[in-house]
Length: 227
Image (cartoon, rainbow, N blue to C red):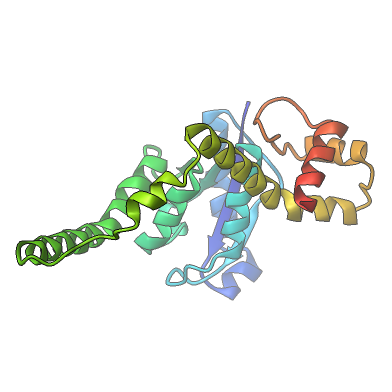
């Protein structure tokens, strides 16, 4: 069964304290997951925020948990993510799959479309810049960096670049897991085997996204964190 992470948001402290709005969201998300055969991973992430703000720490945590577990982010209403298109672009960049219970056909592709709106002005600016450069070139003005060709030659080939990218990805994965590992250690999971079991219990994905954690893979993870 595929995994899911729930994210709930209410707009006022009163709603958060009374539970108004949250119960309806929970029911909607749970029913959505039941219909789609998704297994909700506990605990859900709940936030009391204004729809006009983009600093959603609990949403950021929910996105991170989805990345670590390969889960789908599920919300009750699409507007619970944000009314700000620029923030939707952040969701797009995260590459996290999501489902909105009130819009069954909406998913990460919807985010892609909405984020494209925010990029429209950037494209217009780019076009104007290119036109200005073309006009300057037509006037005989020299453009570009004369050292550009030399800089390109400093690259050591495709293999070296691929290795560097792979190492960077592994470091990014380790950095993303650092808060989780530190929390598990604080909870008493000190040995490599204990950490591996705890990571498996929380359904955290391995670096390859396949298989389970073992003492050896945890050792490699800690070594990369230390490096």
